Length: 183
Image (cartoon, rainbow, N blue to C red; front, side):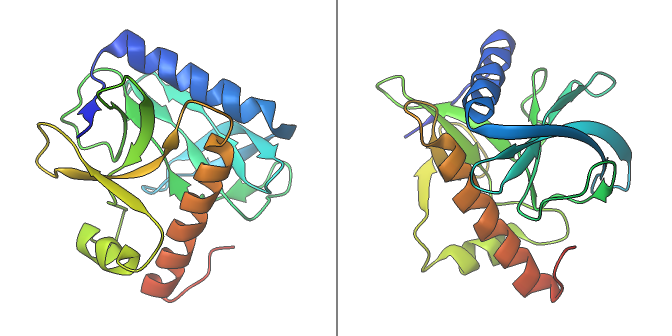
């Protein structure tokens, strides 16, 4: 069973660790305009990893939200982009329904987690889609939705690959369930 990390300082530190681990494998940086799920336009610096995964990270001060979009189609510099998956965090209130969390096990290992909830698609559909896929779900202590998808551990050097595989899974799921491919 995993325990959700709730301490604001520890969450900020873990976000920094995640960004450092992703930066190590990143090869390019430039600005794009990100269109969020609610059509909010956010200028954001994105990084390209060695896996053709792009990612960005910005703290939205007015929302106390760490906004972290990820995508697999490499955008042009200065273009408008839509991500394939967002791994967003809050450092204030963990009951706000953020789908991404950090969790720790009894040995203190920290994991990047996702609830399986995405805008416009039910959690049940994603659970059904993942039923025969190589994904790991773990129980989480004290949450209404007691199971989270384990994206990967922050220990070691595989988190970028782990995120790539999760984003790829989410992208394929969304394409299949929405009937369209994102451009």
